[in-house]
Length: 609
Image (cartoon, rainbow, N blue to C red; front, top):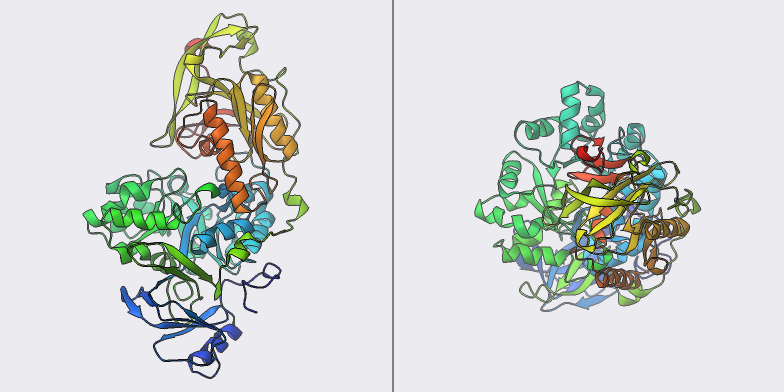
């Protein structure tokens, strides 16, 4: 029985590279010495090398394509009639953080396969911040027990900002070196352009050993080159950075492509750069093979066939990209960039038999998906799974509850004031940046009062998962709700428990329920839990089927909107309130954090001191 149909498909971790035995058998099938296991017969397929639609039957041997031919075969174990259909290579997710889907790797794979995604490049650094190298290895092993090819990228170290970030666990450069040498690790993740420039300026040559080793061993250092231009960009290229997924402006895409970077344009739950920037490829006649379309972060509720990978392709076509070029942006281009083009991203002998079957190039509607040679059936997608993760990954929020009676936003020596001017974090949804807005509020009973609905102010906090004394406080403006609270334990990139709410008793209630769940999303009215989603795996992922999780996320968001939340993504944006590498102000367990200065600042104005 072929992989993908058997009950034991998750019981053994499959390599992302074909074995000698697999290649031997595929070779014999190609010569006609052995019969193929399956033939996809009668269709047309996209030849990514000629960039043409061609005729040919695909002969499959185990997990691999043995040959593509028009010659007849009478001895195949199974022949599938695909007459009139268009066959594409399985889609490649070139840059994604699986944890942001809220799905564990096994159920994430099902959501991806349903959308035609058969290969994933990911780093699992969110789990790494909680459970270190052991957790990351457990996640990639789980992903590789599915038909999805899981390629690992390793961060150089965790946390990304060790000088200022508190994480439950760490990844040292030595451990990163271990991961880099592992089977199926193809590069370094999120190599920060700003840090590169700092290291070069400070003469910290030792920090580049891992990058140099990656380049020497044909692993790709993947850049996080936000606001990195000009000389700084040249410096990143000089030390070996190969790509960037952070461009925000057309001239930035032009500069980065022209200097030799592979540029990834994102469309995820928040990011919309495919929509805003892919037209630059046509307008400036850039080589399309230097562009990949990726996701970065996406809730599983958005991982549907019409909203996930094909949406990127349709958007590119709508912006003037030729249809075949757009498809190559989610297949062949990414595979070639990561130097695995001989096994994924193309329909060719020796590659994995990962095939997306469409009705036509015009409709771009998925009819069927084959992964590693086997059809992705509804029975497989709907089958209940028990991935059985290690207990250590299921109890990762051991901190004590927070207490509204002892948690103080207003410094005690200001308790006699009648009013103070605070600085509230306010989000610009278009850029996903935050800034500070001054608001004068009254002081009542020794604490700031946020009772004026027109101010749209909420208390905000970030509680470290393990160190009870680390609870940072601040204020948020413009979220929309005025009473009640919401708390989450997925907070990039440290995953403390972040909450917003008013009054502060409701906020503490929500945070404490997250702690009790050992990770989750919780919405409360003043004294009642309205809805919750448990995230038991490392405190950042659920372990349940995608369909049920989608439904619960949609319900959670509906409850937020019913209470006035008006952000485009009222749940997902909360995960970014604590991201200390994103502009410009975030909440950390230190307090209000200036991400440009990399320092804690007061949530009150100078005049209020």
